[in-house]
Length: 297
Image 1 (tube, rainbow, N blue to C red):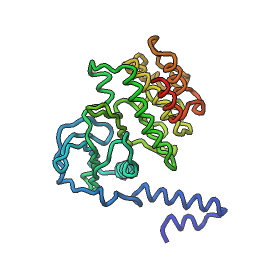
Image 2: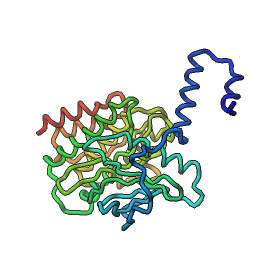
Image 3: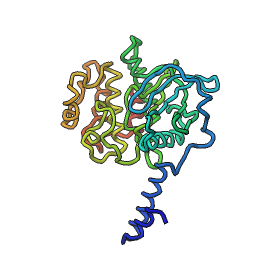
Image 4: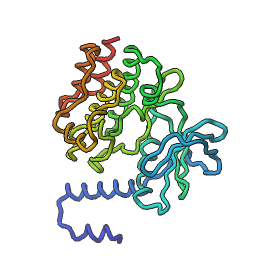
């Protein structure tokens, strides 16, 4: 008998509680390795040709490179100690992304899962929405904004329709990739979650008040962040750039939001305001947002 089973055998619980405990036990085993990489996705590290670094943060770095002579992006996890936490974060992101297939979500092509070489290989797209908005003079007119916003909606209609819903929790322009035809794809599922674990993690300027407050949350936190991104696409400014980092959390929890440009059409301004409503239940769903955007075209 395992230590967990011995501990459970001494509990006096009803049938409903016992089933809940069994489910939690199954979930824990899945998170810690009970589930695994699909055999068809397993690739040897030696097959990867690592190129220049694209981005990085936390315990992972993203590189461009080649796999079987195909241009790819490689997200590599690193930690000299290879802690259980790092291994769990790697497994969870892999297990989330390998179950997803949608035109507006970056495609997982392979996984290296033997420490110390932990890596995900995905399709390569040359630009991020952040780069286009803030590091170029490329025109992004309202028609283009609506088109990109509808692509985002399609990705989240798919994610939130899954059972249980996949909540991304880190929507921001840096996590939307673009190809040369302006097709948008969502990436970075490191914070994707179906529970309240790590409720305070994320990028503060895009986090809903309930995330910053550390209270319960649902898929409407993604709607909130979408509203901030929509504002950013129109304003081409960084949200809350004028707010000192130490004051940002308090400001958002108190209801503070970026100022919508006067040039923003009324219908678009109203949509942004609806998306970043303080009360999560008042925020629209992504299918409704998609319909509103379609009416603007």
